[in-house]
Image (cartoon, rainbow, N blue to C red; front, top):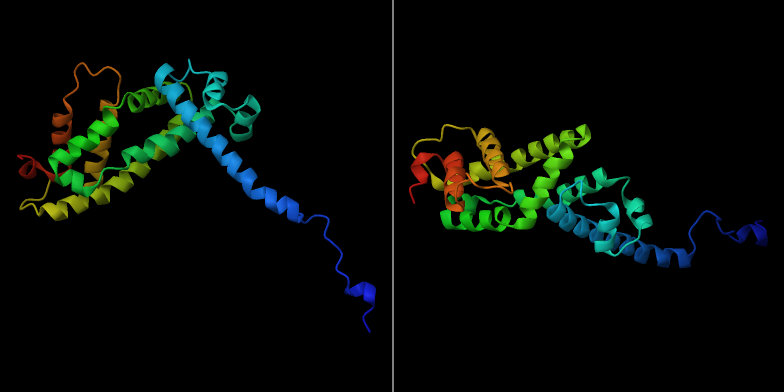
Length: 217
């Protein structure tokens, strides 16, 4: 017969207490909030001052967090700008839709939103500055480009299917996507002295995506 002592379950010293479990969710929420503030502060600092001029202390000041909080999330400034680009800048370039490729005015509005924004332009300028002195960031940039191309190619194909062009565009969707992203990245520069207007940039994008038969409008 089982003894009374054997029936008593002894607490596991390695298991979190009920109080610890209650604290876990707020702690995770606080960590996420501090991370978001760091990303926002870094995005603004890099865009305004460039990669090298923006210091970790300045970024923490903008984010209203301590230096210890920074190092709880990131090893260094390189890792921070990589996170900013991955979580903030890259999703913006992934936002073009088939509807916008098919409709000239809608595409101009999209390009104005993302290419005519000083913070977006400044952030991409800072990213180029950071990559120039770090091979790891250059490798990450190549990976991000491939992801963007892979995401945009089916959007190009969907727009072509909707357009129903009589003659197929000369570029395959994957090559069209590569060319579009290369053109947009050139446009994301502070000095646009020789750059086309947004309307002309939209025509170039639509030409690459849909071919010459569909850009007269």
